[in-house]
Amino acid sequence: LPQGEKMADLETTNEKRLKKIEQLKERIAKEQARLNDSIRKERTGQLVAAGVLMESIYKSATPEGRQRIKDQAQKHLTDERNLKRVQAMFNRLDDRKENAAE
Image (cartoon, rainbow, N blue to C red):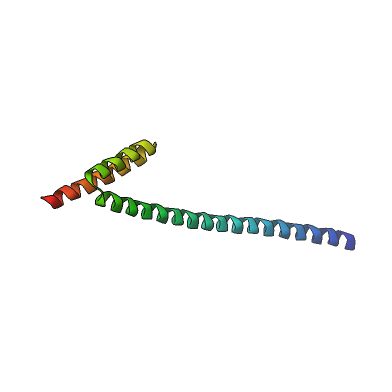
């Protein structure tokens, strides 16, 4: 009988260990998700800052400079969605400049 009790204790200990492993896996997954979220937020911030810089450069450019920027965007942005977004920015800034001139 004492031998059987030891076997039962061993099974209980193994069950506890398996449960602990599952809990640790869940904690690791949650921490990985937090890390990924932090990395995504940092990249988003960088993209916003780059957009602000691009707007500033575009707004201060001569008409010829603006055309060069548009040409470069057309050349380098192969993703149609991003190209349309940048073109919309150019249009918005061009409209703002035209309205300010009136």
